[in-house]
Image (spheres, rainbow, N blue to C red):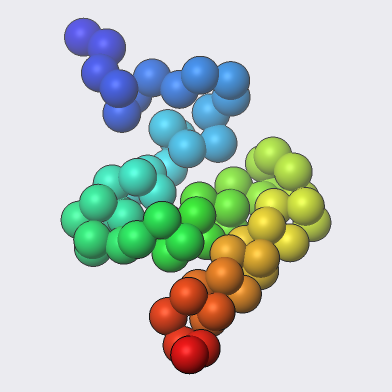
Length: 70
């Protein structure tokens, strides 16, 4: 039976993981910025390489600004 966790639109860079980023993020109650970092770091080798690392860094910068700067 097909479920959302074993179905992926466009690729297999998430569904073939031991635990998918979405599962990890949900179980650990991560916010959007934190979840995005996990997503981009998890997939960078299979999908967009350096561009995904740059996206992860951008979300870390956003997280610093939103949570740690006055």
